[in-house]
Length: 137
Image 1 (cartoon, rainbow, N blue to C red):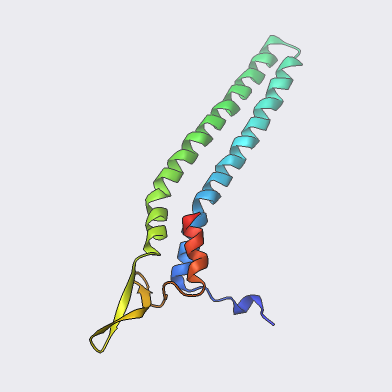
Image 2 (cartoon, helix red, strand yellow):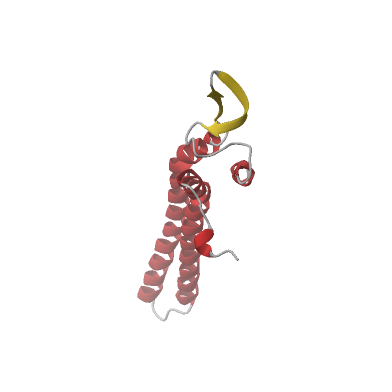
């Protein structure tokens, strides 16, 4: 049978997969923070209603406001980070389609075609189609 060590992802495909999933990782991280801060703000909103003194109520309002501001900062920073990595991700997705035919003894062969970025990757054959589907998604 096959084991985990039998999986062979060459350098290009490993880099490609990392860049393909990086926006989702970034959004997941900032989305998690967003919902965590939202829960904290909700907690202080409820505590504010049960405050015994005006001073305690003011402290709870300040903490609630702080966590609501953190939520806004998460959205802003998340959007900034996704825009920051967008060029690298887009470039990796389009590099997959930059394939060249290889000349043998002066003749241009129809097949095989090899990726210009990494000539160890043959285009339009085998697992190339899986990565092509990922790049289109």
